[in-house]
Length: 614
Image (cartoon, rainbow, N blue to C red; front, side, top):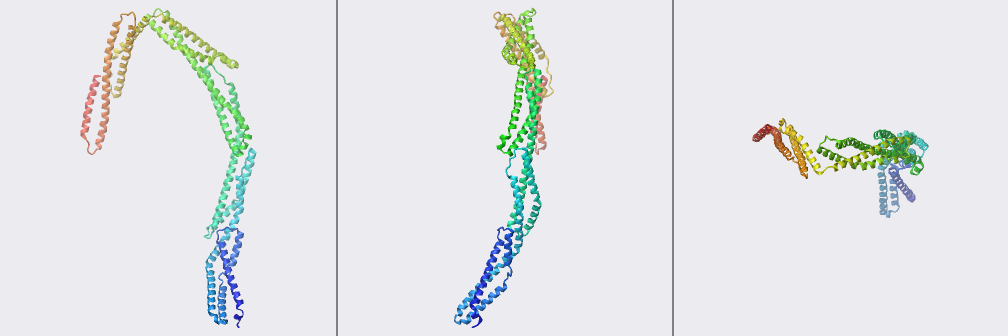
């Protein structure tokens, strides 16, 4: 028996063992390639283990000796098995074919692993650097995350000292971030270099973006927090300074408020009020400016300190609120004093008007009742004119008296200080003047009523007639002179329009004065005992008819002239426009132009005739 026949079982066992190890190696290398090429992110330490395992498995990657040995042993095992058992050659052949097929499948699998293994070998070194980069950014990320947390966590400083302490802490945060700048810049450069490699893994981009985002956010949050704290510190500084600055104008307003009083001389009162208003407006503007600054600063302070600290912090602000009411009090009092001065001024003006009318009216009444120079008719007219004036002013007394007592009553001045009591002397003079006006007007009313009562109705009607005729005569003389005077020939359309306005005014004056004459005649007709003055009215009426006729003719002629001249002006404009259009037309309508010229000639001739008539 040969060696192979004697040791067949042992050799077959070794062959099977070597096949299983070959398969196990391929399983391991497939698994490790999967880990290398996976998108999972490892730590640098974890990937080093994977890298070392992969490197170890890739030694003798070709495994030519293994493949040759297995192939040789398969041939020998098949051959020696056939020598001892000649009757089983068919089975041996089938076994050899089956084993051969398995070995070829293993070798084919080995060959298919070559490409991914080579790809993994080309990337593993770069991946190792990328994983190391990921580990290296963790310390920086940790520092940045801690500083961002410090910049975002809630703080509620409610004193200036607490704000200053927070500013110191935030400046320390920024210094810590700045200290990481060189490391960060180096990592960014390193990341950019790694990213430029075509074999860069996808997680590298995420790591770089995460680092850049964290750096940017941390810097922004830190700077925003420091800026906010610095702004609140300024608000605290403004708040403290303005709380002191507002006291002086508030005290000045409070002192000024005490000095306000009623001034009973309207002119001096207006000047005094003007000075007080200007001073108050300046002080009020200063107070409002300080107050708005305080409220704005306080709102920002409380926004950071928290609403739960508001009640504790706003005690000082409430005190300023209470004192700032003086601005509204002064505005209200100045408005009240201005209203008082306006009413007093109107009262004094009305009394001055009545006094200015009253003195000459009293003298006139005395002259009417005592003079022997007046005709009976003039006396009647003057009495009734004066009666109408007295009756017109008499209703003014009652509201004037109420206003005088409301503004000047001595009871309203009780308890006032010496300076205001001195002013009340002016009030007394105003009251005395009113009493004088009231007494004089009442007396005049009584006397006028007595005088008017002594005049009969016939005397009244005749006086109206007499005065009407008397006033008509001078107008009649003037009107006849105007009617006889030739009209000035107008040179332009504007002159013609002015002339038309003049003749229309004259014509209206004729109608108005004739109405007055007719009213006088109507008064005469109401007399129980008629007088013989009809011929004078008839004469005047005849003269008026002549003047009215001239006035009507002039209105008619001048109106016709204006209408003609206006039409001529419109036609001239149309003619100019038509000539301009004809010059640019291809086939101008000359016949239309001839028609316009003909019409222009006719209207112009008519205008010339009308001018000659005028």
